[in-house]
Length: 116
Image 1 (cartoon, rainbow, N blue to C red):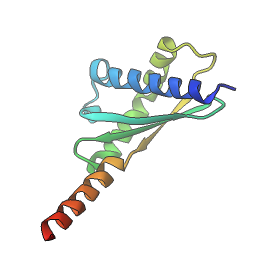
Image 2: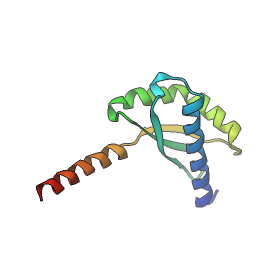
Image 3: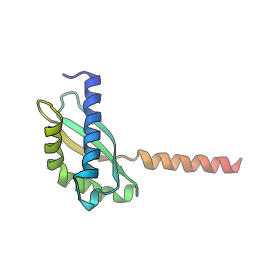
Image 4: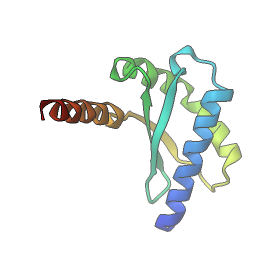
């Protein structure tokens, strides 16, 4: 089993490679203006959970996740050729609500500052 530091390195490398692929290689219109917020790899290297978000927010989540699922075979195959691992983890895509939640908190704090 890989160490925690190695798992973090693998996750970061997957995040960087997918981000680069979204910019240069994938031309699906559903996957425009999205970003990878985090990647978590399990200890057995069986799965990599990829968290994504979009500039427009949760309104595009279904389209983005459908686009990523349809491109997942291509993405996994390309990643496996670029990142040397004995077996490459299967990709699972999830919508990340963190940017929307942070924006909501910022708006609430701004309202509190105005009332002072």
